Image (cartoon, rainbow, N blue to C red; front, side, top):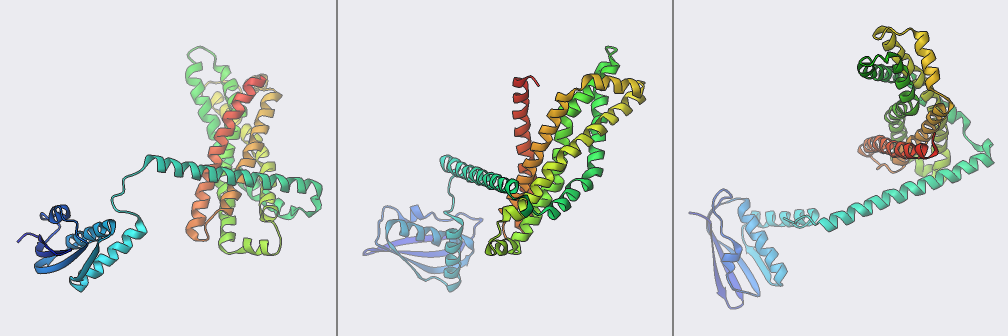
Length: 368
């Protein structure tokens, strides 16, 4: 027999007799039809010859309880089997933890939560920038209190140790730019202009951007992981207990090291990019290296070098601040440290893209 639910009104109590085979794959009675037009003060559920039951019965009883709570009526399920009562209680607790069942998404609520989260992150980043600014002024006033040993160690890690990957990426970018330019320029007999394309593209955009991306993936993630691991180990709490500001002790050495080393890496990347273009020009376009170098010198002036240095210094600051901030905001667990490292890379690249767009507009207005 199929599942059945027969309701009988006894005074102010609606007695519901449940019987038949309750299978979720077969038609089931609906509570609205079982109740009809009755508005009882109490509902009593009973098992009357149930042959088989599964989660469909638990769901039906839970629906009845929900209706009773909404109308203020009492619900008596003591006549049900102990296993069924236990499962109904477990379902109620699970729904309380996970929210109301079947809740439709609310666009305004989602927008509000997203705006609140954005404001919280923006205010946190602004507050962190303020702390770094105050710490930098303190460094200028009292340079003797700065941890130069830690700074030199970080300069080695984020500078000298990053030379191989920066060399490879910059050389290949120069090759790619030269090959791309050669496809068009050979059609017009302007092979020598490939030096202009590679030189200007490398100095004004690709050198600083590619170095920033490499530094974000290599050093920014390392900063977030190191500081996040220290937070999980309660080392940062120990520093605060001793009256030592984490920004002064942990952030500023990394900030200064990356700000100083990123322009140097960028100039090195620019040189490797031009070398990559020279290899393509010599091997594919048959342009002598001396002619390529002379044309590069005519295309690049000090304004292009200044643009590269300014961009790279700002990118280094952004990567250092993003990595350290995500590390300080990491959860006290291994999963939190991993998420902090990932978030540091994403935040660094996003900030660099925004800064690069601002620089493009600013340099165009200034005519640089």
